[in-house]
Amino acid sequence: MYEKVIRDNVHGDIYFNDPIFIEILDTFEMQRLRRILQLGGTALAYPGATHTRFSHSIGVYHILTLFFESNDLSQISEKDQKLVLLAGLMHDVGHGPFSHSFEKINAEKHEKYSGYIIKNPNGNILKILNKYQIDPNDVVSIIEGTHPNKILNLLVSSQLDADRLDYLKRDSYNCGVDYATLDIRWIVRHIKVVDHKMVFPKKLVYAIESYLLGRHHMYKQVYNHKCSIIFDALLEVWFKRLKDLYQSNFDFKNIYLENIFKELLNNQSIPIDKYLELDDYTMFEIFKVTKKSDDKILADLSLRLLDRKTFAIAKESEVDKKLLFKQLEKNGLDPNYYLIELTPKKSIIYRDGIINGKDETIWIQNKTQLEPLSKYSMFGESMKIINETNNEKILLFPKKLV
Picture 1 (cartoon, rainbow, N blue to C red):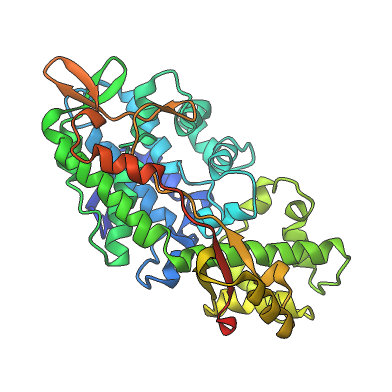
Picture 2 (cartoon, rainbow, N blue to C red):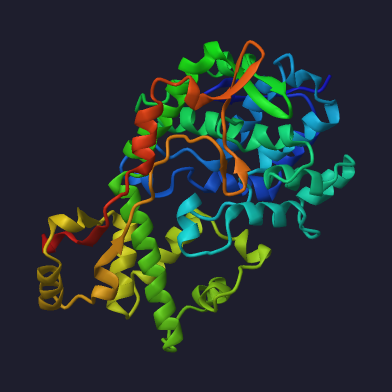
């Protein structure tokens, strides 16, 4: 029997029992994920958060293998299990530099690029799938949540899926915080399939509440940390300056810079071959080039991204906006680039029902009765209050103005 073992800092030994998985991992497309940080700019706040999309991908694969050890899910055919494992392994292959941060300057979501890359006729992944007689459309449909077998979709993307179970535990571990201590095996072992739904026995309510509260605290303390928000905003305004200069026929004196971003600068999608050239290392090299730009604004923004010379951040109600404009003018700083206004994304812990066309309900089985989690959770009202709380607009500006 074929077996390959990878030692993981979060889950321990991860076993691969089919050569297709290792061949996929060894492709250029998947190895590129070693050069993409899982948490992007969050590493500015948590120095240990230098784990990558590659380690997360094998973690998702591992948790899916645990799913298939449960009684109901073990009944899924060997072929479909392999499809799900491949989907889990490659669900993030389409991430751009700095993970979600890159989507601030590229409108095309990473899930779409994952599909493009997997089905790319000039790529390495499609050749391997064809070799093992795997239909790439089946794998992509699971990633996109459109496979006819709804259970396969839910294992990779749902309120309680392998993706979230891994990234919460992995991110918590690498950031050095303890908000997401999850009993993954306990949760996974009790999953049942009823009426094409993944359901959990009533005794798991407390473990699921712990998972949801842990995710909420991770969003508050880690994912929405001010350093992460500032990094994303600086990246977006850096690209805005790059684009403004491009449209004014600025001489960048670097052909590569214009070539690599040509499509983005012209409001087009980046072709797969160029997209695969981009990773965190590439972007930092570009920042090194642009910090020497003749344009002072582009040079300054590049230096800030390189050397963690971040902006200050304050709620709109805490600052005098008119005074900020005066201070910017006094310091010769263009408010188009040095005064950023945004409203942080709302923190949604959990809510029952159809959201964006998808059933996000976590189903609880009490004897023969299926009910949504909200009926049994003692935190139901608290979650509702948090879900309905609107975030106040915030302002970002150079610290010397404070």
